[in-house]
Length: 290
Ligand SMILES: [Zn+2]
Image 1 (tube, rainbow, N blue to C red):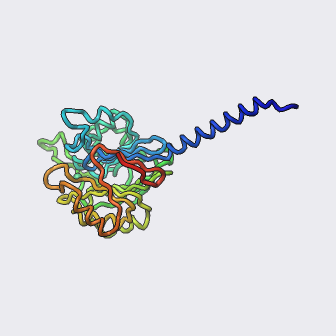
Image 2 (cartoon, protein in one colour; image 1 turned 135 degrees about the vertical axis):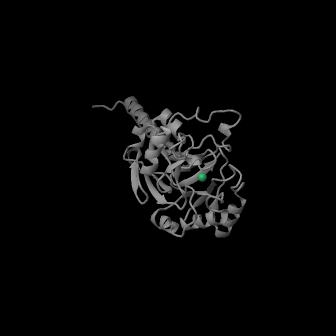
Image 3 (cartoon, helix red, strand yellow; image 1 turned 90 degrees about the vertical axis):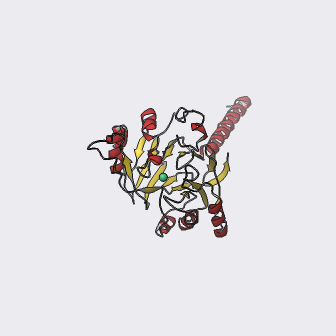
């Protein structure tokens, strides 16, 4: 049977076009985006487009999207998971409103989950799933694309009770405070320290996980002072250290200069995000910030 040359060329061209489209979308599909809203609030968008939100106090005074009477929640349309390190107000933040708006599933310890359902009307169905976990545990979420490990933190954790009054205490138990290691398939491994103090066993985090980027609380007063935050970066063997939990309110460090200076001595990469900015990882590689 004679070969139809035109048909063969057409087939070849369409095949290479498909191949090209696959490789192009493959490249963009490897991107993980991390956005900082100021304070301890970050979103992580995975290569497949799943959105994780950590300690979502979006109405914090550093967030440009919350300034001049703007509502930072209006732009929040898709959130798959909300991760809470502990129960303090500057970390639970806008979690309840975001959960109601997006249907996001809660990742936290069981006591914190139980009390924000009971006291703050967090949607119960979204707080009673297999994503409730404890320190030392690891869970798989996002159809296996993301592994979340809950790590120890030295701090406190209580849930403020908006219904406080006669017979109702002002604060309820919030379980143990925590940090998170978030391992993204085809993406970086991210450590969020919560509000922890420095502790020498942070070295175990560095031994157990290959931390590409550490989001470290540096504000002091309630948690690590900048010098100890740099020691934490070293202990978890962070390839890149990014400061958080500073400059938001009086009493905590107002800038990251001391942290950057300490990291320089230790030859650890430092990057300062601005509130509202997003950084991008291609695979495990930090490629750019905006
Ligand atoms: Zn805090």
